[in-house]
Image 1 (tube, one colour):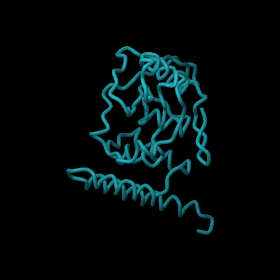
Image 2 (cartoon, rainbow, N blue to C red):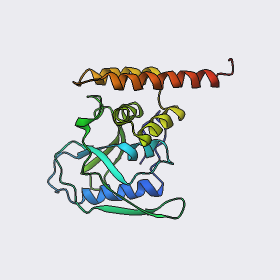
Image 3 (cartoon, rainbow, N blue to C red):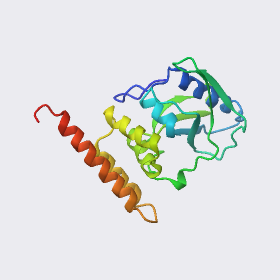
Image 4 (cartoon, rainbow, N blue to C red):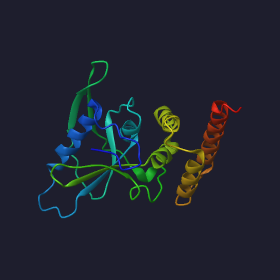
Amino acid sequence: MSADAGRPALATEGAFFQAVWRLITDFEATLPETLTTPVRVTLAGGVAAALYTPTRLSSDVDALFSHRVLLPAEAMAFYTDADGQRRVVTWDHNYNPILGLLHPDAEAEAWDVARGPLGRIQVRVLSPVDLAVSKIGRYADPDRADIQALWDCGLLTADDFRKRVTESLAYYVGDTGWIEARLESLCAQWEVERAQSDPRG
């Protein structure tokens, strides 16, 4: 499991993602051998954030699928975190990208992570900017922290983020003002942070 050339290394070696990988490969084993096209599993949510910022953990896996799938209801994988605590990760059966902000090209432009050992699954992850876009809609505390972590790691720019959010909003109906306000607040905050970190003052 490796990152694409020119992209930051993804945190696939830690105990958390190894548990996620077991969950994914267990699901792959339920797919028929006659499957002609691999199922694309595009990771989103906290699991995607954890691939970019390794200190992030999540208890469930948010994912978009290229096929209609039936996920095992009781599937889970266990791991031990850095504090020695036993934790579990499961599929999020309630994840619904239709109700959140997502660019229409997000799946097509997701980054490759790995192919399943049986060749029936292709695992991908939302790019940093699309992951941030997906999180500005809900914007709970973990979402705000994830967006900021992507910025802090140098995986986002304010210009790219603003452009992607604006493009995404063009495909949605309803009141977009609250997302636009969040976007401008974030970008203004980042401009202040950038100015403060510039040694030229």
